[in-house]
Image (cartoon, rainbow, N blue to C red; front, side):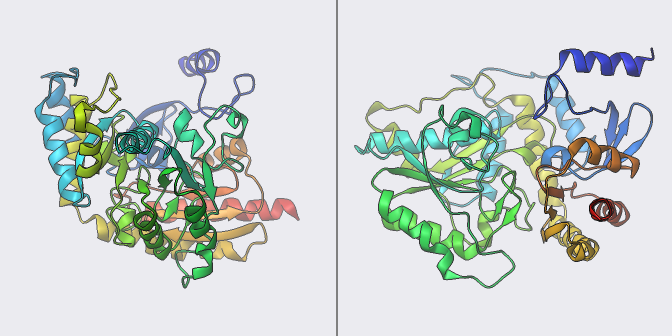
Length: 431
């Protein structure tokens, strides 16, 4: 048995990978290294990465500046507790985040991961209203089709029917849901799409601590792009009914939609903002929950403290890499890169719309989606894409790519071609 066979056998025996069976797991492919936009497997095959490792590796793999930041920091300290202690990487990162996010967000809580950032935001909202003498305002309103993470509070605001967490429906807190925005990003706004949203605020506002949503792009819940006017109306309704707005920009933050934050499409400021994924350029797990002075002081008055404290909060190693990643992004011409990626994907994926097996094709910023009529066989699609020399990981009915911002035109065209070819192959099989 070769070393590769030994490793894959041990992988299957000991490791339980995400979203797969322990008895009959989806196949895994052993990675030797990664650099730029390419993942190199143990057999030497190179794959063009269309996933940016679940949307976080925006600068590509093995970037010299991010490597240097990690090396420099680890020689000083890799970690120190954040309770009672602080350090320069966290302070400088907070200053950088404050400079690039909405001006109303003055207080930054550094968390472990995206779903924890959402949970922190929900706890902030609930604790704020308790401190304000409104303990009845403890429920969340969320959008159908939304996804906010796999931890328990985050699961409670994910789509309760079509999402990934139906089996836990009896175990999570029951929240309020309103219809998914029906108004597409690329079409004229239809004011009638607000009817259910407005009704939800009117009916439930006395119980609502906050509305939790993904601005403009609903990610893992369906890669759905909705109109900025909907988001503007959410902000107006929050002001009108005294409800906080939590913007989950874990997936959309740092340029992915063509704006630095997806909230910028609507020119609105949330009360709480959640960031993660691309924050460290895909090097380490780190997230941030930002909030207003009113909320932070509201929780803290009369001797109050915010009741959350992760062991690895403000990890110096992660903060150092995040700071380097943000500075690298600010120096780069990322807007032009995203615009070019969007143009190539629009031109390259358009042929898929003529296939009967394709329900929809949509592109926004650095996100390209082919929505099929039926669910995709993940194992079969992985083999197909690897044979094509690309790494694409579909889910549900969705073929999609969210590549690193540094991808070249030729590599991007090859990714798009592979998506269309898979759709064409599916069409042929159905005849």
